[in-house]
Image (cartoon, rainbow, N blue to C red; front, side, top):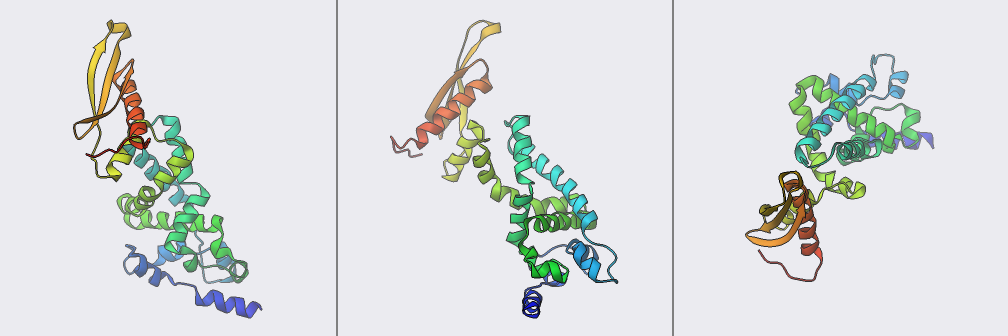
Length: 248
């Protein structure tokens, strides 16, 4: 039985050169860093000629991911409070999320594992998949510097952010309305301040939100920003209520 399992594992193992070509990774002819990123400590223990596993690259990749994801959230969601940014970053870099990214790339098939690990299904182990994804990010940074590592990471963030925002219920009304409108080709909402009343120390702002010149919602608040958030929430609810057909 062990021979059969070992044979199956060998058949589905992808070597670093093939992985590099399949994913178009910018390592050139020198695959030493990529090979190290794919090497688990269990493989190192069984091969005396191998001098390093992927743990140091995993450490480096973890730091790069924290920075890139944090900077992306900061720029992508300019209205999001600091606490919500922290929660979203934590969700995007947690073990299961990074393991899912590794599965998308089929990195499990390329991991260099010891025989015992391979025979017990470690190629689909979330902890190991997270580690190898971080190690590949670390290798890309070490070989090419930050812009290349960032370009590797960003498509995963763009494709998964909505799911994480929904799960965490973090998307502020303006961002949610804009995402909804742009997904339907309606353009970007415009916020118009229509009235300001009250003394300087207690002003009330009235704002309308428009899509292609058509008012879809309104709101009031003690600042323009607060009024815009109320207007965005009202507009989003009006668009999604199903009580009226909207054309723009």
